[in-house]
Length: 245
Image 1 (cartoon, rainbow, N blue to C red):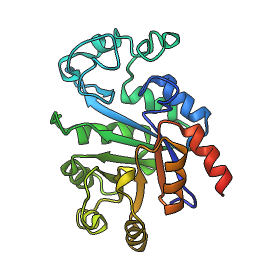
Image 2: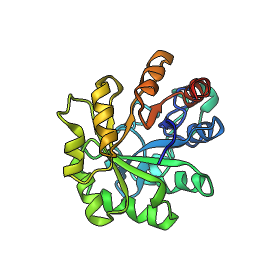
Image 3: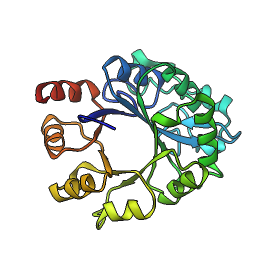
């Protein structure tokens, strides 16, 4: 899929703007990111909500679990002031709102299902339904730390690419994902090693690593030959890549 390392903006350009907001995603696009990573939960009234945490406390002026709040309640929250007062009144977006932004743009979309701590009912079906509506399935990766969800995704639509997120020292991850019919591994960057890259490439298993933010680490993982870097600083990663290729 990729001739050189892709730059995937982690929760948008979250090193420059409040994470998982429309301004963060727009900044990432403006910085030339090849892809956008975002996180999805489900609200009390069954809406797909783009936010990292299960609760709104850290990134808004509100309190509570997303699962216990309606969309109207979520939309009343300020999701920007905590980062910088110039971003006051930024809102938590829905998945549909974010996908509207990507219409007509040649950009990879990495949707992480946040269904590890809270088991959201039929989140896989609901996300696929929205992707089908926007006709974005051919340039989307659905990832999760909950690998049961990735199996469900393939059962619903085998053409959608899936990515297995992990932090542990997974033994022979290339065999693991092939056995589960998962397309991509998403290891934390310090879990990378040369033989992992070699074995994955031999088996056509792609590797997108997270969350790589400092120059030295970016250069190291690019030299290792990963397919994608997931980073808070897509502008920095693009500049480093320009100096390498």
